Image 1: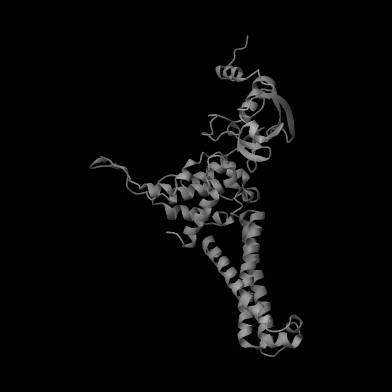
Image 2: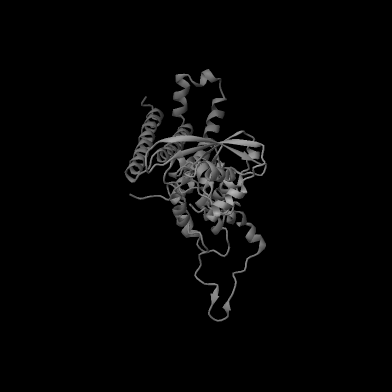
Length: 117
Length: 258
């Protein structure tokens, strides 16, 4: 199994945090273009997904938050307990969780964007 | 007749009998080699305004209970032997005056994050091992012993000395590791003492071992597990700021420092 140095992982961690923050600001600013209750209406939510630009923004946000969140979870779990087997399980579990969340979220974004929902 | 060890007689003569003030000292007692029992023993000891916690402990040992286990040596905050928790905060017993604690009762316990040997003495193997791991010495290929011209010096400017000089004040007392919340959780964390020493040598322009040291601390239980609580810097009796050293080290690993 390829092992990244911790400094590389932490650069990714900080980078994803900054990226997610930037995209979240854009996301919130887009919500301000209409009233809060309107932005949660079914048709408006679907319309967001069907816009290619917005779908790309949501997909990027999903990836950045998943990578950042699951790495954060890995760090917390590594601090709670130590040992080679435990650490390998935590790393694999977090990578699997990250991949599953990205896959499920991407499925929603892609299917909605293509009008399949 | 039993003879009195010269050092013990010295300690006996130090006790000031004219004092009208006294302090109650609560000493945490345990001996893990015998059983898991832990208890506090209370002693009342006369004090003067200059009396330190170590003076009180030695008074207890001399007059009230010889069996109190405490490690000490220089009595002037140079050797780093008498680290302990004093009223809940890590400190050097020889460097903490009773008068500055502003309390009639002083509680002393062994340092956290170290296995107890007996009473106030702890096993410092973990800290020493981590200290060794970061190679706390100047690494370079050439030597100060020059074959042609005899002995020469690796010259250094005062500006370069300023970059690391505070970190060379570390006396390896282990108080920073005792105060560190990550040390309490992560049994394999390298610790603020070793990280500060890694910075001390990396910042030294005579040293060429930067990459070797960065490799040691750049692992899953290395420098990145520091939460920057800053308690290490708060408790250091020598004014070293390990928390700052750790942040400066991160700069090297993130590529924002050369």
